Length: 103
Image (cartoon, rainbow, N blue to C red):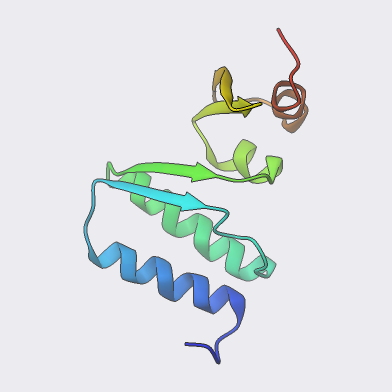
């Protein structure tokens, strides 16, 4: 696997996890260091999991990813959950709340 690109390594790892048929999947920065095509493939896999009724916990510092994929967002700031949002409408809203902004 070490001869594969970063994106293909991520896809292989995700494929292994999918074989487990878990009810909950945890992704921590799954698109870090991968190309745009691999990101699209990863997002498709995650969307398919959600469509099958699986729970997906997705941690990322990429606000555009979160805004594009999540239906519920918990903002962590200084070690605490500071905000819960459903279907955030904009990346700016996420940025505001993720940097300690209050509503």
